[in-house]
Image (cartoon, rainbow, N blue to C red; front, side, top):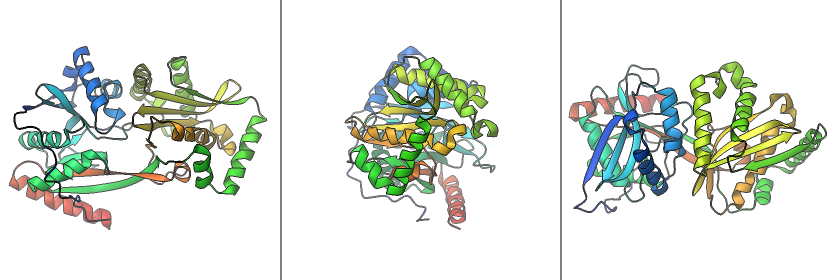
Length: 385
């Protein structure tokens, strides 16, 4: 692994808020923000965000909080400039750090949140990070550091954070990096498919499609509206639960909270015009299903499921073959797979990679920061070993 210190380019000349601007920070239990007036401001911020993150938009994060944190232990930190909302991030003080009894302040994530980057208005990235870090210094309590992750390592947010850390001489560590599959190329879907798979593999997929077609009426469907959404959602939950995830207890339908989150998030995304559903039907039954969130200029491939009884026909790959049509959409420049690094299926089809990382950052006074430096060296040394 590379040097654990976050690389910081010389960005001292980065644009800063006007001297007369008033920056205010508020952090309070999320339940206090669950009202229509704030929802509208939240939606406006998402539309102005420098980097899209559907998992922190109002239509996704609120269902997650309602389902997974009904007690209101998670705080929403908001940053305003001259009364206008310019940043938002869910935070919680945690007593354990990846199983170890190390208290920290962290960006709240859950098992179905695949990006923890804050929503920040374009151009306000330095102001947001400085406001967050100043607030964390004053509200550290028992926390030994601030933990963020996963965040994209190649965008405006990380660049601005690196500059602020450099300017403040504040120590930080990249404690984990993952490169996950991403779809981003200036090629036609057909050309991309041909370049991604060998001729032998493409021939095998054509054979599998033909054999599966012999079992009934095989058709592909793409939907971007809310028609039949409730029934489609239940079919997805049932299909995912019927396979290995259901056996392992990790399917969405295995837990009331995650099933509720899925239902409400899909309905919310559809209402915002940000939902895309794809289905490979065999007669009237789905054999593969895919949920994507369209957050211009990008997209996020959120969840997929397939009928394991037809695994020999690779229905998931057949569906992803159709999904390459994203390359032809002028409003989508890239799609994040949301998959783990080295995923056995998508990594062979999508050639690009998105670098994401988990970051730990020093907060508080000199003694706390010195202790964090020791902990960071131990952790990064262990990961390198």
